Length: 349
Image (cartoon, rainbow, N blue to C red; front, side):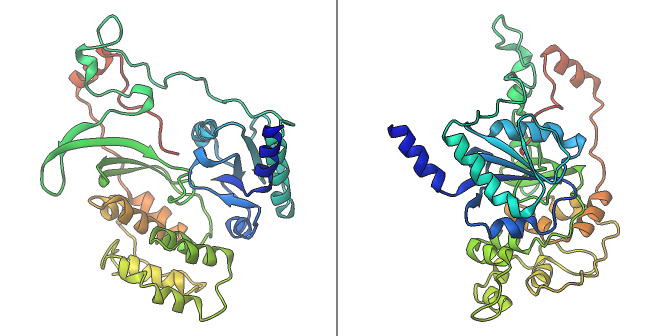
């Protein structure tokens, strides 16, 4: 009886939803969701009850979608909004008018045990077999490096700024990270939060989404970000005046993310806040993400990524060189002896 009462109260609360955007997502879907009081878009799948797949996730990114699905805690369900993807047990919705009501109903049914929580898509097994040379998988050459449970172990390398030998961590990031443009997957090497190397695994999807609200959120202004996202930027004072009063522009380092035409994140932020329809005339020839991101801290890099329109960012991704490969045969032999795959590991959403 007590649990039924708690479930009833929980069903009346906002539904926590995690978004996974694919190709050909409905226009202004984020704007529509932000105006639905019954839904709350969360930043991590661990806080969500509903996985909302908007548009169609391409085949190359389905493994990431499956990993994302399995990160949601039970009880959980998946909703496909104008999506051609096929996930067992997921409910399909085509009309924007139905999405809020449908998600609310599914969540209530989950809490009342009227529908079963979705099982894992992937097997509960390590993505990489990882053993040392000892009888129980311990010790020997296998203790250095490797990817236990899909996460590469940090190894030391010289810091770009002062040459100190610090741990480096290499992993794929994207395509569903909320602070990443949808579809973008980057292979990054980090030392702490400083980017050492960058390579493009998958470019962002083609979209006309205005990422100005993401910049505001990254700058610590979530209320103003939601106001821009909902589209209610009118009222007492113009929206750009409110943005100026927050001094958000001054929080962006001068010259951050400068391109060959001289524009930087500040200039692109001003353009996004002014809500102009025309795009900036950026000169991006020979400009790659390695030119823009290497040496930046994580937060600075996120500001740079979200300051570009999608077409410009896709051009920059195309200009980014392929990662260098290590052809050292001795290293390959060592990896094989330790039973480890240094190159394959799970990513970060």
